[in-house]
Length: 140
Image 1: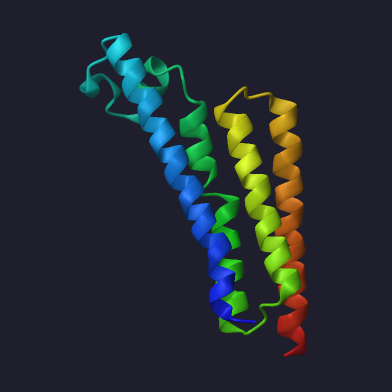
Image 2 (image 1 turned 180 degrees about the vertical axis):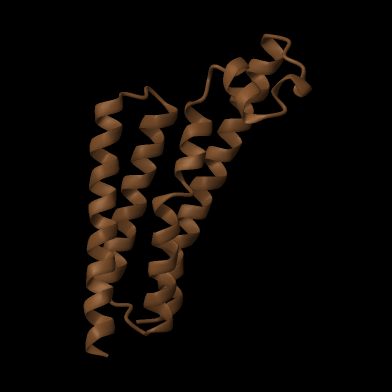
């Protein structure tokens, strides 16, 4: 398998992160304009959390730098160690699909239990990816 194929799911995750980032600023700037919040009034995270009540996109953006960091590393390990195969690619795309769904729920209707179930499913896929890679690394 061409190792470059492993980086397509990473590019998709980066694109998702960019979309959530855009959503975050559209929501945040919109609220600041509507409520006439001066930018200096939200200079710290404590001030921002007190004034900016629409935080789902910001929360989701931060979340995209938690488990996905291990995802990016897993794809890098798979490429460098030449462990990329159809299983790794399927797990990677599954993780991306679940993260897209998680972000859609989080930035959309934000039903906690729906979001949580998708989050857990994505985490399990990520741990399965790392388990599979670990076995491959031990065999090499």
